[in-house]
Image (cartoon, rainbow, N blue to C red; front, side, top):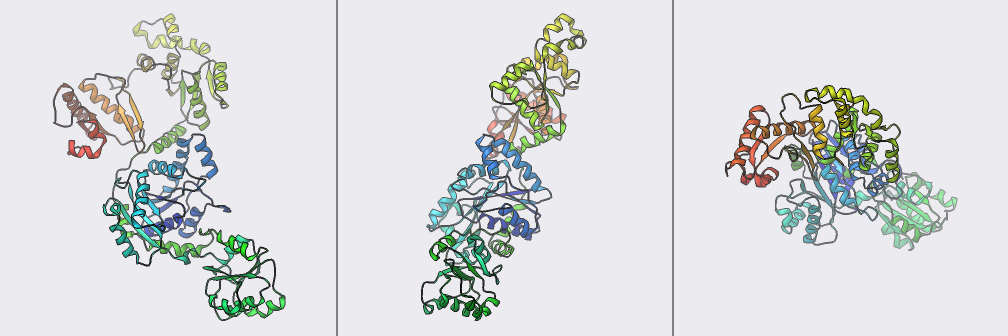
Length: 626
């Protein structure tokens, strides 16, 4: 599935309008399109559902998930819970992606109160492994300045040469030129757009009528009394005139879409407006100020205009204050203004590079498992498995806190090996509470039950009861015995104990799996954009070729078990046939042995690390490597 992350370069670029148009463009191409707004950003006065999500639902018939509330997001960011926040967003993302070919993800808009928006957008784009499309609205700036501003924003996501940074959509372009001429001139002045790595994906001209609110929206903003509703649900305000002039000087201003603002005692203006309405001029309405209402006899005289649909509103404020309020009218699309939403959707869709976007959706690309998705999937699987895990370092502060978190989130049923009073003291000292039901076992009270089983397990080593009792003084040994007897499903240690002290009891009491001659370890390295598995960096410092092959196979199995498609690079100080030597030959032999043992595994070696990690380097040093 393709994911496009739509990121604004600034406030007021019309992000929702672009999202509406993108969905329409891709739907016309026959794709199943989804939409996801991870974080709600309500405007002052907004009530009810999040605007972008609701407009998409009403315009396209989709059912996007409900975004996270802004207060909740800011609280998590303030508490340093970015990883947990991203996991919540991944959960909603996967819900939105069900059955879709492409998903449009709308980023946060930078505002005075959300200065962190750009940083959050970067984390979102990387966590979702999304391709980024910037959205900008040219201001009164020369073309070179516009290009520089867009390039600066592109750098935030990796730069315009990053294959995941696709290009920019320019919205609200104010020019007398056609969009084709403007686009060509922009490319002439922009090395960024001439490079071919970063595309101009759309140029949407500014159309004032697309911002025209309904007269009803004006009434709602002002809290106006509706003297005559008329067509106020459908008529739109494109211009405001304050009438302090004579009637003759006002007549030429009475045009379609005009909202006439005048004191309620200006009978002459009221009559002139009514005559214009009766002559078929679809005015936006008549707004009477200063809490003065026309005489009923005058309103009766204007009955023809009222019946023709002229909206008449009344407010208590003066004309000047009313005009100031009107200037604060939110130009965003109201969620119930389906007509305007449909018009804007089709208008934007008609100015996007539909062919290229459709082609991009059909371009195969390597999907990477990002750290946020990796953590989310790991936690989901752990919650479903509901395993019992013993923690031998039961009074160590980090271990106690981790157990509390895992228990509270349902990740595992943790068992702390420690005296209960010590665990309680640790929690109190570090300022967190232990969740109800967290299991704490006193090693002194359970040690005796494992003496005989341990003697039986190590009878070949002539271990007697006193020797077993002595070894069981180590809580790691107790935990390992619990694991050997299937009382728990796993053991986690290593904060205080060394790797050797953690693994040695398992080798003595549990042994290696059938067919395995050694134990190896792997590190899951969570880089910003992907998760890689490194093995073996701890257990086997000088493996033979056969041992190295076994380590490679075990590492591949570990990667697959955690949802990572294994592709194994056997690392050495040279690539391919470029060098020789004992270590290089050992890696070459190990690669052949591993391939013979598992033909379906994609494995190559010897490879230098930079060739394995960097595609550009690989093309030079190992051009035939897969």
